[in-house]
Every structure is written in structure tokens, then in C-alpha cells.
Image (cartoon, rainbow, N blue to C red; front, side, top):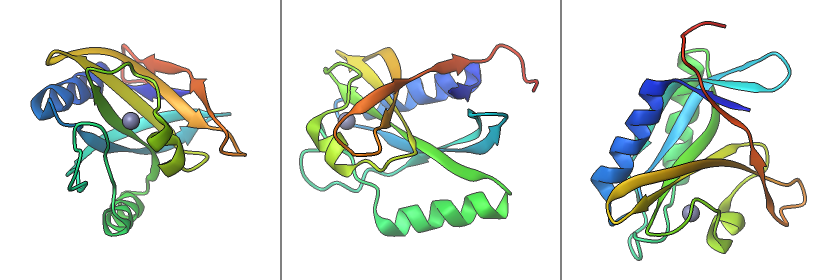
Length: 145
Ligand SMILES: [Zn+2]
């Protein structure tokens, strides 16, 4: 389960709205608590490096990924996953998303309809990469653990 604060949720909505009609993307840094609660400590916006078709796809370069891993390690955190927006499309992973995702990470997708942030869903790629499954998401009311 991915656990984010209300502030982090609104940060994602803001970012998605600001980049519309292009896709926004970013990463989640945090810790794993208990069995499998992914407790997000920081939401890090990432510049969308995709040069073409930025409406429909995002790309995180290996350099950006390395920088993220470094930042996370310095703070004693892990890269837990990523978010991106789907302008005028549902919050469901596309084929492109499936081809470019990695197992284990949490992928939050936020739909933006006519410039307005809409539903958010979280997904995880299956181990055989054939499909995504929904991951539970929690917007926690209080900062406690
Ligand atoms: Zn997508």
C-alpha cells in the first residue's frame, strides 16, 4: 500500500494541473513500514525529458534515476515509486507505461480532465510484466506511524 499525506496528494494534483496538457511526472521517496506500507516522506517533481508526444508519455532518464537514488540514499530513504499524469485519459496504465515500468515500484497515475485534476490510482507491475495490478493507496489524515 502506498501511503501519502494530504499535502503530498495536493502537491501531485497541483503539478498535474500545472503541466496540463502535458504529462507531469515525479518520484516518491520514503520508507517501508511493517509488511508492505510504503510511507512517502517526499514527493520529488521530475522534469519530463520526453521530447516528443509529451501529452501521452513521460520518461525518466537513467541520469535522473541515478540522481534520485543518490538523494534518497543521502536521506536514508528509498525510491518507492513514481507518479505521472494522464491528460484527458483515465488513471489506468497505457501499453507504453507497461513496457517502461519496472516490477516492485509503485506507479501512481492521476487523470487530468480538461485541465482539472481527477481520480488517482496506484498500480504495480506484475512480476512477469504482463499487466499491472491495483495497489491500495492511503491518504493519511495524521502524520503518525
Ligand atoms: Zn501513463
